[in-house]
Image (cartoon, rainbow over all chains, first blue to last red):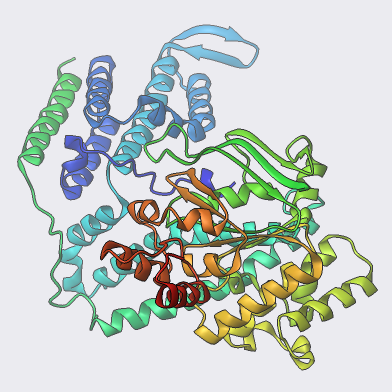
Length: 266
Length: 288
């Protein structure tokens, strides 16, 4: 039951998208999102959709996975689409009782739905091709200037890395403890809501005990290795812009420029 | 012999259809008989932990069947639940599953889930705590106050008290000091003799398997590599070594003696056998 939770959803691979510097991926994603919210009209969107499809093909992530990431937002897309469809003033095409559909309504609804889909799909592509660890590294690096105004960026990033690092461990631990208690006849699947909540006590108590134990062990281990915070710390895998990043940057600048140009010209 | 547990063509694949796909158990056939003491051996990742979790229905086979007393445990929900009680499973480091306020309550958790009478629960808890060597006054203490070795005993007593037909123990000695190991060793044997339970003892140490079991099953890469009496298994010691498994130290000594041209039997796996063998060699000069 817990194995269905895919946090971070990283999909290991060796495609150019996987090999890119996480910082440039993050920045390109931001640029892409800005673009899809700035532009309007058929051709700019076509360009954005094609760019995303191209990126998915390059990434070797199965398209099925991208579609799966869209499933949870289906309702939001439908809801926004319908609201825009019925409540946009403009040239009336169709009238039924209190509902009326306008030409502008159709356009706005399609645009909004497409924007949300592109937003989620492109973000998923980032998390599918980037491990949570390199994402945190990228964030720490990009937010680095905030250290000047005494924001503890390194500490936040470290906390985030540790939390991400321990999610799978704790899930595994939970599974183990659940199996052990099931082997002793604990029943997590039947009974009323109350009795099911009560059945979790034999899982939660050992889980908390072990989480605290792990935290303490980790703290000791870090201190043994003289961890003193981010000051003067170097990295094993330093982030580096490479040729792939340069190509990606040029392509995305072209995409953004192209989409905006199409938006202005048409 | 009376068969109690059988798996047929059991296959288990983790995360099918993703890059993490892994077949941990690959078409395994295995039968355990009533009262047998079986050592299940294999190194890390050989699939032994996955296999044993099928015995009580915690994992559902991707392919194949698990039968207890001839009945498929996945035919309905009641059978699966009955399998939990028929096959007791002690996980690795079982002390991490303790949760109750007192040792008594924790040991009673399993029997209580079985729906036993209060008197019967009381009897089983006290009896099995005695078998694992926990003094009476510990029963009312919190399990979290105890030492590591005592916690392990409490956890084992928790499964013992369910009095299953088959008991599977996954590395029950891991992380204990030699004295603790010897104790665990002794009371598993005591329990086996008292109840005639089928014991499946999972370990990666040939040393323990050789000392304890009447039958040894060796797993490698999700398949059963060997299955037989310790004599049969250790007669193939060179194959075990080739599979990256350990053989008992005595056996290693005898393999080396044989390699140096001394006429000894390399299927020796206990110190007593070794002594007898060497004595025979010294007196008669004949092979043992």
